[in-house]
Each structure stands twice: as C-alpha cells, then as structure tokens.
Amino acid sequence: MAWREVTLVLDELSKKIVQEMARGISSYEELAKKFGVTRSTVYRRVLKLEEEKVIIRQIRIALDFEKIGRVAIHFGLNVEPKDEEKAVEILSKLSDVKMIWRTYGTCNLVMIVFCDRGEEGKAIDAMRRELEEMHVTPACTCVGYSWEKNNMTPF
Figure (cartoon, rainbow, N blue to C red):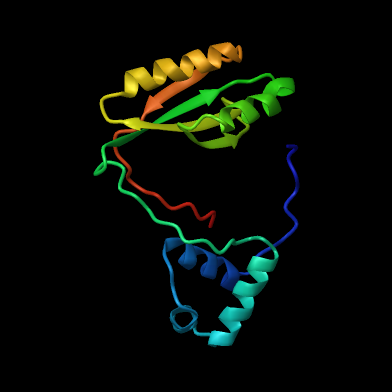
C-alpha cells in the first residue's frame, strides 16, 4: 500500500468529539454539554465523521495487559522496499502479531506481538525464526513491562 495524502481536515469540534469518543462511549447529550453545542450538532458531526470513514462505529474494550499476564514485544524491522508489501501480508497472518505500522525512520516496519508473561524469550525466538524465513533481521526488539499511557487518538 502506497503512502497517500490525507485530504480531510477536521475542525476543532470534530477533533474534540473524536478524542472523547476514543476515550470511551459518550452519549450525544454528554458530548453536547461538554462542548457547549446542541445534541443535533454532535449527531450531524458524528454522522459526517462516519460517512468520511474517520470513525467506525464498533464496540471496543481496553484491557490491562499487566493484570491478565500478557506482555507486549516490539519489533522494529528493516525490510527492502520491494519486499515490504509481501512482508506485511505474511506478518498479518501470524496470530501473535497484533499491530503493524509502516514507518519512516530507523525502521520501516514496526510490529507488536503479545505473549504470556514469562514466555518472552520463546516468543522472540519464534518470531525471529519467522523473520529469518522472510530474510528479515529485526533492527531492534523491546519487551514492554508496563503500560504508562494508552491513547490512540492522533490529536
């Protein structure tokens, strides 16, 4: 997938609605009160954000990974540009790989793998074997031991 320019510009109210909705479910009435607008204004704004595919209406939960004994492992990968699409396709099919980002900088792919606490070494070795088959060597590998902040809104 090639980099594409984002053409939709969100105004401040739309950004605030997106931020608040990403923190948890809020009623249109609550959002209207919080931002000093009418309920119908919030409704129309959310409808437009859905039509533009900025937000997708889904029910999500947030887990405390520490409490359930799961650990996140971060892999930074350098993949030849010509092989990037194939690498993402293969990595996307691996059940332990939960997130993949295409990036610029030190690495061009970053992925997060989850495993049980205490199984980090086995999970890293297994992922390295998978990557070796793809002729990819991780540029960096980090084991997360604590989640300090989890806010996936871009504003």
